Length: 183
Ligand SMILES: Cc1cc2nc3c(=O)[nH]c(=O)nc-3n(C[C@H](O)[C@H](O)[C@H](O)COP(=O)(O)O)c2cc1C
Image: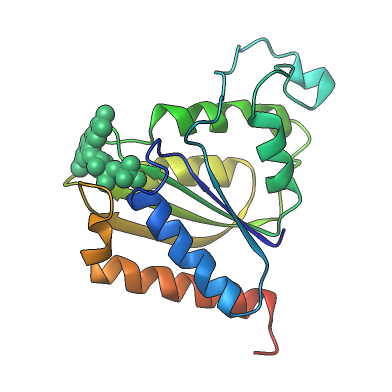
């Protein structure tokens, strides 16, 4: 898959999903192949800190959904990763997903892919959510294309944040330009 979007929200059709899907829809309209993955309902166990991944170059926890999702990221050219803001930061479910990617850090297995960070908050703290996502992306040496930050409380509210919705379109166009330079 060319562009993979991952929402960490437990609201499958919440605001984070909505913003990420807007980016992916734009990319699809520009001829790119995309896949949206919601972590809602997925089992993502926390990193054990066992450091065994240093030898295996893959997370030793096998019996959950992390591996299949991470393989899709590894097969992609662009990752659009997003989280709702929980206490001024990414939500715990997405943090578990991120922490497990330590297993790919030793050999820089994610390096060189492009990435976009997405965050939604009701009021305050979205900037720090983006910072955490940037920490993840920079550590893995993704090429960072930028962020989209939206505001919304109830699922679907972010559609009224016209600036964020517009920025999602702009980021989608940027991805299309980078992947289809002839357009
Ligand atoms: C546990 C929890 C913590 C939250 N913490 C914050 C916060 O620190 N700042 C904020 O503005 N909104 C906070 N919110 C509101 C969510 O960020 C907001 O509802 C967001 O739109 C949820 O995105 P989603 O629909 O993608 O899940 C919190 C919500 C929950 C459930």
